[in-house]
Image (cartoon, rainbow, N blue to C red; front, side, top):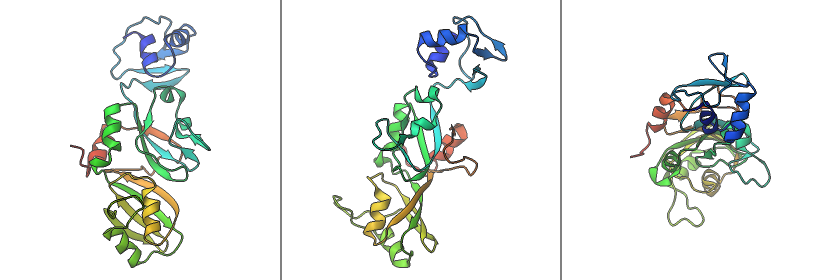
Length: 238
């Protein structure tokens, strides 16, 4: 594939913009500055650099982001910055979408991709993908609250009670809650229906994939094969 086309496919702008990047000597491979936009390379596994920053060719985008508070999971935001502002421009240009949404005040693990099938599988409530949330509550947690969440609470506009897949107390005013649906404001509504209130909410795991301890808030990284395998663990994605 021509290097001009490779850059274009990776989100570095229009074909004309990518061609100009090459002519300006801003693109290199293995330390060798490229000048010919039509130079051919096998894209699979190709490492290239733009303005000194190294990128690897990726046919599709699969990312994890440690979402901070104050960002909306939308391209059309109302009151806060979009989470896409936390990504390099080249990735944002590839049209990545959030897989499910976290409220602007909710932090934690967020998946993003430009692969339609991947987005569908992991955002579908029918797939019963377990998601684990660390919840800080306004009032102390007690056995009655845990029992209500595990038995099921009635949410407005829902035909039947909604139960947590798992729930355990982690502190005087904190608990770990696992859900397998993706209903609007579900965790906050469940806690409220059980007689308490959410003060802080953090998603720590999706499927078998946990938010890495070394992924700082507001930063991202690629999902590699091992991450995708962990993600699929414990999730019914058949």
